[in-house]
Length: 437
Image (tube, rainbow, N blue to C red):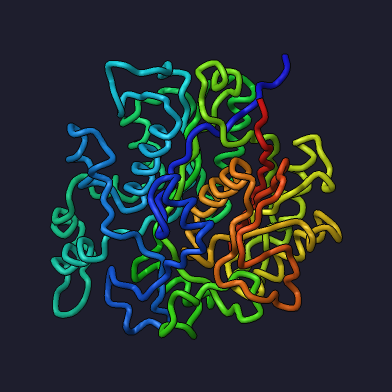
């Protein structure tokens, strides 16, 4: 039985540059830079005080009225995913239980969910208040914590911080009863989630799948951890909009961004039958890892070249067919150099000539949510036949020659490849194809 073709028919983005597909795309092509000094908490004692923040964000307006109480037990990562799901389904035109339970347009058992998630940080104020009840004479008492301290946490406390809760809430709200999965591979999570969802549809396991990722490391622990890994830009607290500079000669670290995106992947035949708007087809996928294993002291791009080569092969094309590269581009000098070399290893000399862009300069690194937003940007680039600019890119670092520009460019685009990688040495790549009826 031939595999079914897979289309992207809905895009839901929750990012510092904009909510929803239209605002997101307009910000991208307009080169909006939205990184700024941290305002969600006092970051004055941190070396890096810059982030890509979501403004006045809450999932309450993205859930049915009778589900709003559940927002109280959602960590910020979960709220981002729930909002992105609502935006994606509405953009696709698919009516789910969460939109209109009396007039759904897809069978619940044929709707799946595959979401990438990260390590969700517990609310420090909430946890700290409970911990203080088990402190005696300045020392933490484990027995007191076990007998009384934990009682000061809400019984549902843990359910706010389990990575699979992103998919749990999304599937409950929208009545998705098909295959569901959570992938936790840091910044590679979204590509792996989208790739696995594509294969599920291709083999007939679902009619549609909502897939992507979301994460917010914008909290004291997230800022501390990334600072200890020496990944953050510490030199531009006074010019925060210029802090993250992917592949640029003046790059000196990344910026924490919060957000994510979810895509509606759909059986192409079903999408065409209902007259859906089709942004692009997803035609190739592969994953890879660094064979030397996990080592935070050694820059790695997770064998990006192998993931890209595998995805291109899976699409049944060659590197010569690629018209667009969607880079990961953290802005960490050693990581940018490693990534650029990976693209050269996969695509040869053409890597420097193929139009390329990265979104991190505009909004920072969104970790588990990054890849889905990158894929959303790639699908929109294919749909509009336009390559967005790379914010804060002026001239390439000596080892980072790729086809980037600080200006939007109209191009004929048929095939695009996107790849993301994690600090832990994993990568995932997807190939998009322009849809032509």
